[in-house]
Image (cartoon, rainbow, N blue to C red; front, side):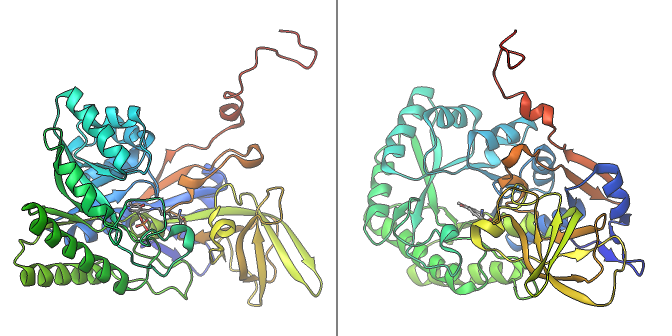
Length: 436
Ligand code: LLP
């Protein structure tokens, strides 16, 4: 985060606050989120698209406080479930600034979104076009919609998070003609659906502008086809999220300004060439907004040296708060943050407390050779897809999120307790003998 400093005493400060004191106050593991950094990133995105819309992708991390910050900074919000919609609704997020995604939104979710006044719903299948048209008609509402298109762009990222290629569950493919057919079907339901534009999201954790540029090029091409075949100029083009962040020193992320500039240039040039009015651009950053704002603070529990093999340093969290290492073979850094530690460093494997050997937080990270139980270790860049993908594996409560701002820290999502978990068990019988 922007305001993190590591002082000579070896103690990490966030917004001027010592992490050893934060650990005493809030326990570990804990997600420490730098609110000023989040707001600064939100403003940078806003500035990059002054005439467009920036939808923060709530799937990266959403809670009531974050929804409020997003609204306050003038951004819009991308939700992809009724649950995320409920968070937005609970803080009175302006409904017209909501965009609703998903390849299998339920009838109940769509009905709720329409009744709530969600600004845009992104249509993802032929089934859904009819479904939503019926719901909107019955509600007497003309719902604004976008059509999600898969532009056939291979994003250079992990296959689980690449979404631009043809063979996948999202959207309507461009190459097969499904996208133009979808446009026809939506225009045919114009009494219930107002088609305002097209959407494409090619993947996540992307480091070069080529993929974004190619997607933009193809999407403008589709806008031209729509005009030529249907005589309508669609006013909006949403190019999704996907901008990568640095997890380790090897990652070289693009700046927001660079991406914004690239997209505006390509879309502007191609529209001019085709005699098309330049559409209002939208983007949906998730990771790049919240990922770098957060560090996970862990306490070391055990250190196990296997001579000639490796050293395992175990912390009090693991795959329940960071599934990305196991799921995507993601790379992280880690550092001792409660004291300077020895100058000599050893490369260790940072593992969690869960009952499986795949429970790795960070592979091959250098830590001071004298790292010991009780030390605090921080793993940076854990704001996106960590708390939001956290689990209760092994009946572990999910960590809290603590927001740090202007020298003050406050819990914005509290720690889950054993009581929270036990409360879900439905069982009238109180003991093993079956007595009530
Ligand atoms: N828009 C749509 C339609 C999306 O599907 C996504 C992410 C985003 C925007 C935001 O993308 P971002 O800017 O965060 O890259 N769990 C994975 C990432 C999954 C991304 C899913 N969709 C991970 O931890 O890497």
